[in-house]
Length: 382
Image (tube, rainbow, N blue to C red; front, side, top):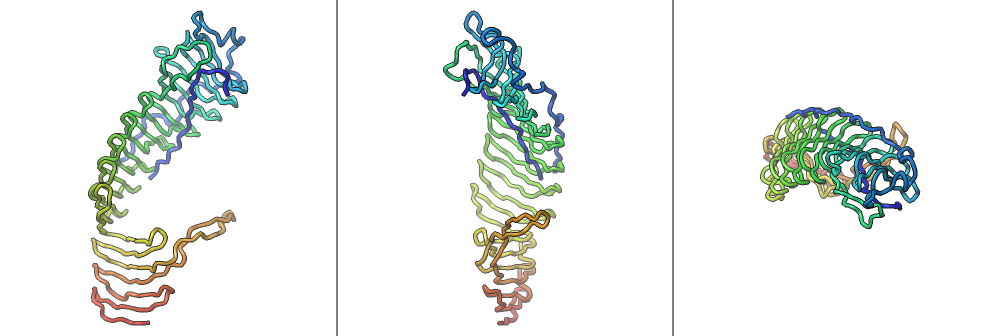
């Protein structure tokens, strides 16, 4: 518990951004390192000089807080130290954790003390975030407050940093809501995600980039809802998929591509519901639920072409213990056991061609069919 009241807890944390894997990303135009700022104080050297009630924590003639002021935790450790001018917080304010490390440093602006520039620190003294706060207009009497003043809100640009001092994000706020540009960065300082907010909601086009600077994803929002074109790309710049959202749901044709540039398949949606899939090129696998393969086929130019395989509805994934060869650690992994092929062969230009083998659930070859471009020529029973 704390002994007396005037505060708002101002905290922040370094945001670790995983930006990974066309258009090339642009430089931030800013340094990737923390800007210089006051070295964080510790609580033991932040106490004002003099005597409590005489030199600090005093009021003016009208009873308003005036001059240096502190507040402490129930343990007696310093929570904050700052300056009031006739009841209004002004100048530099330091906030501390109960162990004495700096939590936040605020500097109220001279031209408008309801706005401040803040630096938030990690427990080891690294800068986690920097930005502006918008405070309620305060004029505080000396006595203990019966209710909390409104909490300050983020306002203007906020920069977030990693524990290595690299800039990880830049986010703009307007009276507590995200509003305007948001960018996230790789340790090199390269942008890996960029978009805008409007009144707290994602709005307009948002782009993300692979580590190599090539475009990874382009997506469109309207007032926080997915609405408009969507594009995704492989790390080599080739197109991965494209489609559109309408009021938060997939709508119309969505095209998906192989990494060699060929169209793989098309999904057709209506109000987010998949109504049709057109297979074009590549390998396609179906499953019995999520645990057992049902079939695997190959397509070329919308026709079955290449080897195929079908399975009995049996077996599935199990956990298997194994020893890591490098560390000797006992680990577990999921492996497929007990599955059995039921039929396999090959298609050519949409027609069965060559032998097609049939197996029992125990794996015994029971039947071989011989096809010639879709025509069954003979059958062997085993």
